Image 1 (tube, rainbow, N blue to C red):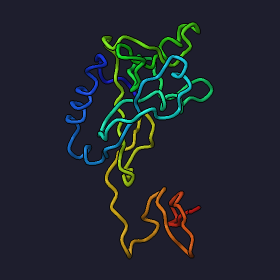
Image 2 (cartoon, rainbow, N blue to C red):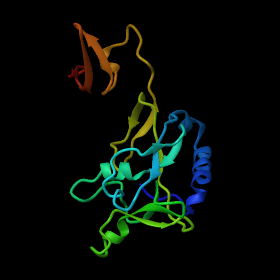
Image 3 (cartoon, rainbow, N blue to C red):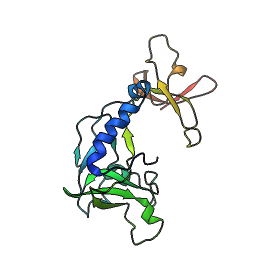
Image 4 (cartoon, rainbow, N blue to C red):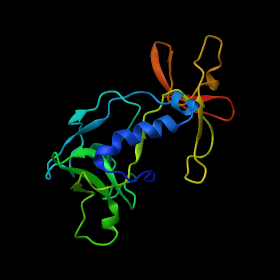
Length: 193
């Protein structure tokens, strides 16, 4: 995950709309509208907040909030923090907003917080955040940075489909119980829990 822009806080919505409009029509079909976390955080809340203070109206693309960053922290680090400064969806007040800033952590313990407040006039990076449909089929790739997943829409199941053509995460009802598919095996069997 890398920054894709260098804009001031007031330009985020315009940049995100342009980003979405530049996606292919095929890519846009896989993205759903969702409310995203936002809101004002005080200094003492910024590193511990793990809930939505308020939400945006439904939209196709937004940016990470401190909630997502804080919820991803494990052993002091997070896969959401990269060595760049990026705006978050949270403000400190009408003039300042929070930005993730792992770059400082590489140089000194003095700036050990994951985020810092900056004037909304500064230009920093943006990491677009999207929510994809839940029935998307992975067509190739191993999920690594060198071989990312390629995605396609997954057809809905219909009567007569074989169960081993369905996907991990889908649910089935059998013998009065609801089960979830956890894997489809190479021998044509499936595992459910």
